[in-house]
Length: 482
Ligand code: NDP
Image (cartoon, rainbow, N blue to C red; front, top):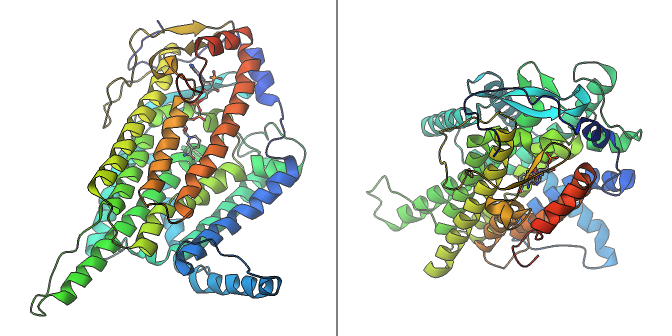
């Protein structure tokens, strides 16, 4: 049984696998097709985001393209018109996005919360960084502030959907600017520590990043960007769609009723409410279980470059919201049959339960093993989120591999659950457009690529013990199937 040590924090200490960890942490592996592949991604991602937005705004969510050779030039002229009409950079867009980032970064730096130790960092001689887990309090405070701003009319949340294109342009610009600044500061100043795991190819290094753990005073930039920006903006986009629907339907009802009535109430549809619920669950999970985030691959291994910066600041919020936008801008107040709607809700909640508990089972197991487990009361704490007396494999490296709970059935069951949630965001919109299914399709690629990378890394790290683990838990995604 791993050490149980509630409310006590101790350093991880030396482990037998230090040398292996250091070697793996330094190893440069060219991913994503190397410099050419990452250049295509850096140019392609923003184009794709604009294309999706124009498709929703001007083409009912349909895929559009030049219909003949002669149509190629007019097609690009149309795209340019769409851009200036619905996504041109504005002071308002930059100000709004910038103020949000500033508020959320200030909260991340200064709100109170329990402190935890992150994973030992091989390049720092096994030292662990301190993290303040104030995400959940910041999230609640942000909710209160935004409700006040909305109700008083200082900042109506419906403006988010009204100015979606402008905000997306601001986010994309921030993604590029912060990527470049981070790279330059790391290469030419000591503020973010030494450049880490560099390939020597400037384009590839800008994409993958130079610093491993950039911080500004008490603000851990990577953790902030990972959970304080993308999911929260995503939630506000969906909420904005919901409020817009409510106001729009209220106006429809008002015009049908006696002009004597000056006030009326709209309503919201089950699919639009579904999207808000889905995004509330995701944001809340990241904040209430923030102590688990430093143990994830993005934080302990990936560097802070275009891939994480752009994707967190712009990609996640402005592409994962396709379902909410499609419901709001294209389908309108649509409803499905009760049984279909209930099925969607059940799938979402069941997948959420599995995802939340799989992540927390492994994370808490690892925290207990290192003696840094803190018991939190954040809402909701789900049954089976922590396993008592779990089975595990002790490795020569020194780490333990969990083979109990969900990990008894599949090695990446949390990926499957996450993917099912993503799929449920699509099916709630029906099957008339590909756009709401972009996220689940893209996610399949992200997760399989991760599984391959992670498997290779762990096989090197744990050697025969990893083989034993794979024999003990042979399935990756779906127990007894695959
Ligand atoms: P994991 O949580 O699977 O972390 C992998 C690491 O966990 C391994 O490298 C290994 O690290 C350790 N590990 C693996 N198996 C075991 C075990 N049996 N017992 C103990 N430790 C083990 O992956 P991620 O960090 O990628 O994902 C975390 C969550 O984030 C997932 O739910 C995922 O779906 C989600 N996610 C969401 C994204 C999105 O865009 N929506 C994008 C990416 C992730 P070690 O070297 O320490 O042994």
